[in-house]
Length: 271
Image (tube, rainbow, N blue to C red; front, side):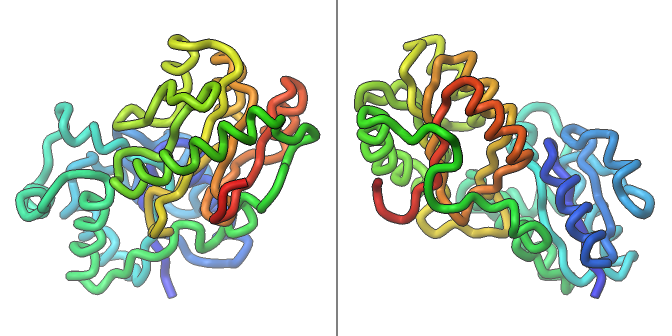
């Protein structure tokens, strides 16, 4: 079995490469010029194929030529890029033209369908790294306070609804009031904006979709999340257990403990 990786930004692709190596799996890497860290060249076992974010045909042709059977996506490729100057190839244009809408699920679902036409299966992006999924319960020294627990319960209901609508994954709450809701800008920018609007005593609630497709758009947190929270005055983070990837867990928890930030993995029910 030969696997392929579509590498976006951040640490996610590097952890997939590391996980594949641990399992002695052959991995063909395609990197996105507008998104992927150039260090991917060193991390990957073989050569890396670089493509523009709109070059779907070129990407699929490379996987086919490499004998790839199954592909995973790792790392964000902000779909705002598609609407801000990228030049899609013919295959991407046809795919975009046939989409009923152009949100994240539709865009990546369209790519999955194009891969399938060529006999390539898009699989769970956490296939090689299940150990990085968030556990249920408190991960830090400090548990959520009564106020923070109330914010989480309030925020989970709203966050799950915006996730169901595929608008975003994150909501920032203060005193059971919405301060900021994520759209196309991403989690970090949402937290930063919340800090500008109401700095201090903020609770960040990040969720998976109710029917989260683990092949793509899996929620991710890590040390940068905690740094941005600290700068914004956020004191608590709730993530969906079992469906959120926690990268650099030891560093992240260490930073959170240092800044007295509570991090909790919430299950399917409110806490």
